Amino acid sequence: MRTERFQFTGGDGHKLAATLDRPDGDPVAFALFAHCFTCGMNVLAARRIAAALAEKGIALLRFDFTGLGASEGEFANSTFSSNVDDLVRAADHLRDTYQAPALLIGHSLGGAAMLAAADRIPEAKAVVTIGAPADPAHVTGLFRERIADIRKHGEIEVQLAGRPFRIKREFLDDIAEHNLAQKIAHLRKALLVMHAPTDNTVGIDNATRIFVAAKHPKSFVSLADADHLLSDTRDAAYVAHVIAAWMERYIDVAPATAAEAGAQPRQVVVQETRQGKFQQQVSVGPHRLIADEPASVGGQDTGPNPYDLVLSGLGACTAMTMRMYADRKSLPLDRVTVTLRHSKIHAEDCEACETATGLLDRIERIIAIEGELDPEQRARLMEIADKCPVHKTLTSEIHIVTRAAD
Image (cartoon, rainbow, N blue to C red; front, top):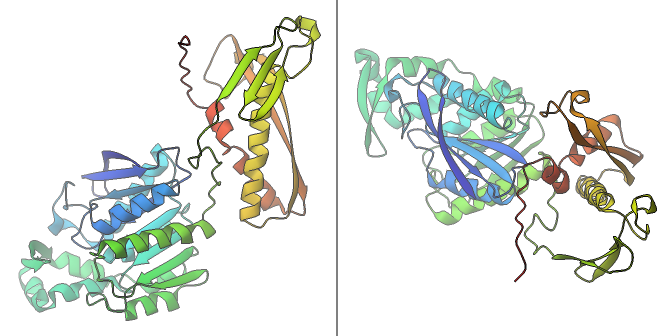
């Protein structure tokens, strides 16, 4: 897992400290995490979830809300609405720099904020809440004995988790205005509710209210014996792995090939046969094949030429990736046929290319899909074709290291 640290601008203009935990390869999707009230992005649950999702190829953005951790601003000036705005701006940042989050995860009050923000992040397909209150006003129970003083004086200092925080009257007024049940009822995204029956901070009845208010698809997982903050590393790890497994049903993730999954890549050896001008023997593990050039350029045409082999790799990878996706999603795909052609074109004939002058390579890939699939399934399979690892390699920057043999 690789970690990137940066800042983005929150809803009120302050710079918010953020971390993006990425898999070692290219992410197949992005997720957004909202931490608990007065916590921070480095809470154990967030770090565990980030690591588990990275193993699945998912990148996770976590950040400190305004006035917390390394983020700018005053905590006393933040409200539930400003937290929701910060989440939306975090999603905007992902959309602008990488891609919008497909998965939203919120812990405690962060879960309530994520439910409130979900309809403003249209690309998100699934939401997870961990120990979340069904009503954001529930958080005022942490300082209920001081509410009258807050109302009277406008702002006072309270002790939360052994630390001092200033709470303003505006926070109370804002949090009372939110109708989270209505938001949940119109979520229109897959929902996973995770809650500990023994949670003494946010009671299990909150999970019931969230679950009942939501429409299907929805799921519930009981976090037996866990505390509210998931302070036991085993509980945090369990939550992380359940989320990683659950989200695959609702978020399209192109399955990894054996090479991407960590299998040892096989060495390819190419050696002249000295029969004819160009003929080569290609050895790939136990497999042998001949490469050659057509007679028109001085070869014997006893095998595919180098560009034929490149196209073969792209075509095979495309069909394999589509087949793996179709099987995982139980799509009625009968057969995939990929036809490819390589040519040289003038750069000025390619509107989408960065190169402006001269000749450049063009690969035309025509995919025939057989099976009783509806238009949406066919369109999704065509999108998956571009996720094949060879396609990604050919369209990314490639570093080739050449050295003399010992």
